[in-house]
Image 1 (cartoon, rainbow, N blue to C red):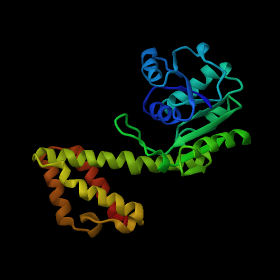
Image 2: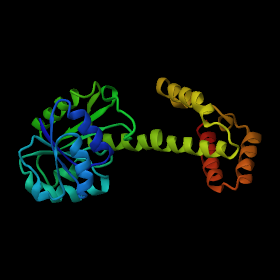
Image 3: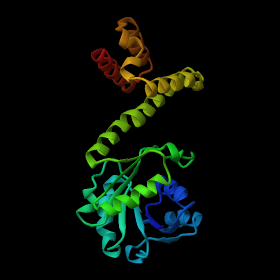
Image 4: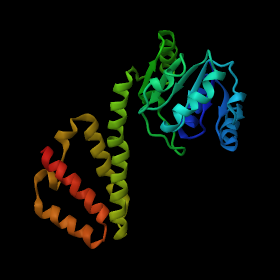
Amino acid sequence: MRISMIGAGRVAYHLALVLSAQHEIVQIYSRTLDKAQQLADQFKAQAIAQPENLNHDIDLMIIAVSDQSIAEVIRQVYFYLQDVLIVHTSGSSHLNVLADVHAKSGVFYPLQTFSLEREIDWENTPLFIEASEPEDQEILTHLANSLSNRVYTYSSSQRLSLHLAAVFACNFANYCYDMAKQVVDVQQVDFSLLYPLMLETASKATQNDPKQMQTGPAMRGDQNILNMHQQMLANMQREDLQNVYQLLSQQILRRH
């Protein structure tokens, strides 16, 4: 397939990287030409920064930009890509963000966290497909199956629920790791000492019902420990961490 990308960030990079092994990356379009050029150079693609320079002789256009930019982007480019299948990669944006403007629209959403420094295990990354037209659904399914062993046809509402859950499971969980590191850094304690605990917790949560795996002072209702921890955070003058600790402890107490 001949594929072009709109966006030059982390998602665009990783998708271009994996797709370039089997397909031709034609253009990288970004409002900042330097960013487009940096990514395009890696895949021998053309870098552009104006929609009128879009090449319509492609099979697929992938919009990999921030969620709030998708609606603006499709309005800018659809005129130049009348017969081209255009998809976005967002978990939190409805298919209709594209379909209300462009007939040949779809979603190609990888449920994964992307960092430039880390490779992606595409074979085990869930890919969620949705399209306005059945024939486009088949194209996206075939493309997804060439990358991943876990391909699903989900509606926009189902995908939205997954994205919300992913914020809890990934973004909030990682911020908890960040807060944990802030706590031990105060006493110059090695954060890596927590790694086995973190890995075991994630392992248990993926193999069992997370509710049944809950441990800790809040689950036990150990008010003495809860009070001691709150006092420690107060002594550190970390009201922000106190508030998070109190809120999460209260929710665990209610849940159990």
